[in-house]
Image (cartoon, rainbow, N blue to C red; front, side):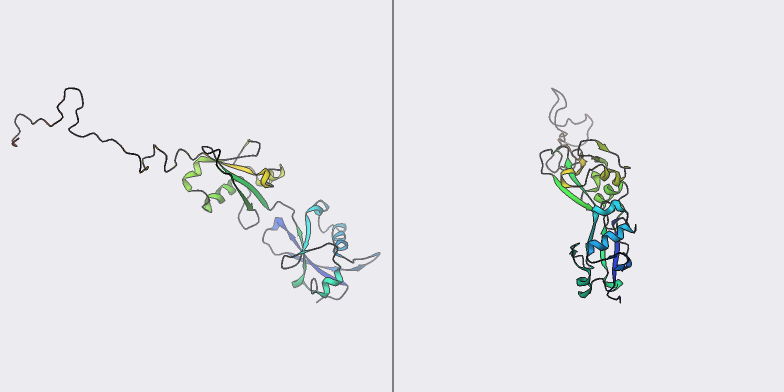
Length: 236
């Protein structure tokens, strides 16, 4: 338990995924300034170098239950509510130091007018998303596309440039691609060749193969009935 001049916070970096947040005890009274509200605390954190200044635009406060907290909230009032009184009730300082989501669309080459399906993937859900290939594996691993489509897919940037499977996801996002719905990358699907109902598929139940009858003439003038061998022993 802390006294009235102390306040607990916990750092939650997006780059650490599901790792437990790191707690820190902040002394609210220090020479030349008293930390009154959360904005004061945040300025102190950055001034001391506990978090890199470049992350200031992507830093927010939330309670332990995930409810957002305003920077103008007074620390003493939060302490009265039980927030930040100990490490177990520490307020969270969430730092989105890496992108946490990526947007992409499914695009069927042979159905260009079909409705485009947009999907968001959370990059901090416990799966590995280092390379674009990991995202491809995730799509098929989750069953979003049938396995036999795997040889028929590739990725494109919104501008149409083909994306290699070994490109780093962070590099794609750094270029501004995949960060929003309007900038979603494309999963191009050329599935026409192996579509189960393709008219030339041997599995198409509506496709009938013509099997010639043994009595069908093979050339003009050939009788349309079997001709017995001269020495055939069976009666006609």
